[in-house]
Length: 336
Image 1 (tube, helix red, strand yellow):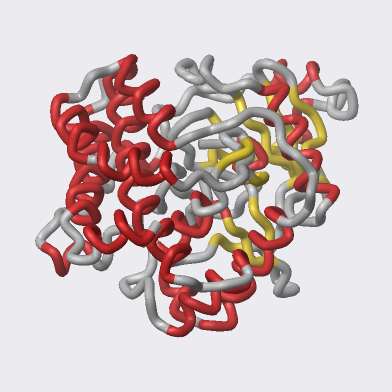
Image 2 (cartoon, rainbow, N blue to C red):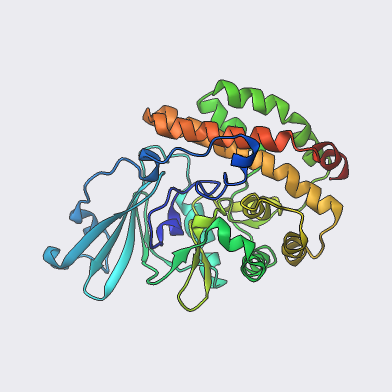
């Protein structure tokens, strides 16, 4: 997915879950990983330099000065455009992104930038986004989360977002998102898992928490580590007010162990505690987020006719099935 999102330095396939890291531990549970083929980049169109004339501070430049390179993206067409010392990320809205509200994205991303969590969006309209390219930065990997210090750095960033008292526009609820995507494409296996996940929906409904500003796509690929050690969070097009467990669960599902001491410190930094109730909520959200991702991928794959993306949907649904079968699920449903 995109937004601030595409302020990055390497190709990646964005989504609700990092395609490389999420499935490392699932291999040990007999689940297949994501397919590495056309999903890595959305079918690429050539870049039309006329688009830069829409951007006031880029218009009128000599076309010969521009060097344009594609950047990997699933949702949008994204490019790095460089002229002299100036380097930008230019995102062209994908053909199936009408369900995204760019005004909401602009508002939320501006707050994130004011909080020092994200580089600012320089230009955004219904078709085009421009932001600066973060030179020398790299996306985090699942391996980074094995470093307790890095995990705490991620926790500190999410804590600043959640405790900012700066309300985002829009609201997202996991089962509302799932039902919306399944309403567009009723993937049979996702529908079955939706039924199986009803106890999670009911348990969360019995114990609601106040919504907080949330990124909603906190995959490792959307965390950028600068050469100076500064951590950025990019890709705000799905951001909204959401349950405080959404983003932490998105991060912890990248780790093979989600209840060790570093994970508990991570949770306590964000929530102020690592109680059994809080850990149970995160456990339930991991299953829900995997179903959100699988339903989204299936919807997009059906709309585009992309078999590779549909196979990735199956991988996310595999993850959901594993989370639902976790031996701690019964406890989580009661403890939440």
